[in-house]
Length: 312
Image 1 (cartoon, one colour):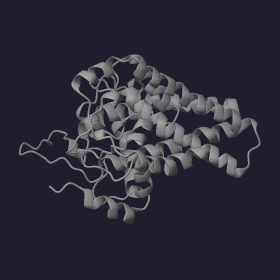
Image 2 (cartoon, helix red, strand yellow):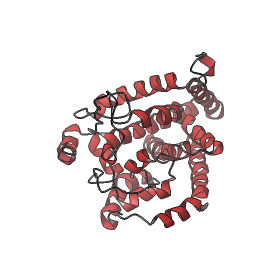
Image 3 (spheres, one colour):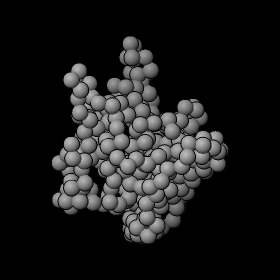
Image 4 (cartoon, one colour):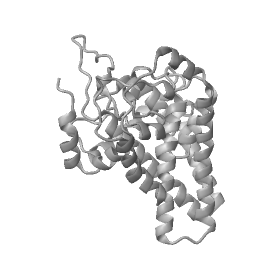
């Protein structure tokens, strides 16, 4: 249980100890950062680390006699790795223009049964964020437990509609969402072949947890923030105040700057090391790990977050 304790206890404490990073670098520095290949190597290292953790866990789970406590601890910890880090990493890689990085993103996502995230996030979420058209944007007053089924079902439906390679020729097997879903099914069979019933259990339980952690983060990132419609009927442009940010230095370093979410939505092509902070963006009182826990308790969530919502 080291990973859960680290994520939900030590990270918040270290965040408060180290504090926030509220400064941006100069444009010249950002140009140098973008060209520095060490950050791409870091992503590759994390990619193999996440997959290595998954397959090593498969070995331990199937080949060793674990107590119930040990088995649950391993599964929960693995879900934090494949979800908290794996999907966060896939999100970053999926926004890269290079096909090799996009392929790496898809590999990570199909291992957690969420390959369609690659389609819906890039083609749907970034266009419809903070509107009623976006299944991944939580609404004011909506509890996490009402949000979860809406976003899981709605995101897949959206990904299916957006997944056709040729929108004019909607052939079932020429849909990227179907292909990625089929790859997950194949991996489920592969894990069963490698580890039997235990392998299948590990695969789907860690995937379920990874999905849960992703969608809780989605809930946190845009809760209660809405884009208004212009007189023309179109939604206003995405602004910094349409995403929640958390500038805590330590948790941002762990989540490859995911918490600088406003800049990501303004400039989706920017690599993680170049994401800026915005003074006008609404700030969360804690990093994502703590806010995820708060989201599980709707009355507490509302008490903490509602007073922080921008006054329009």
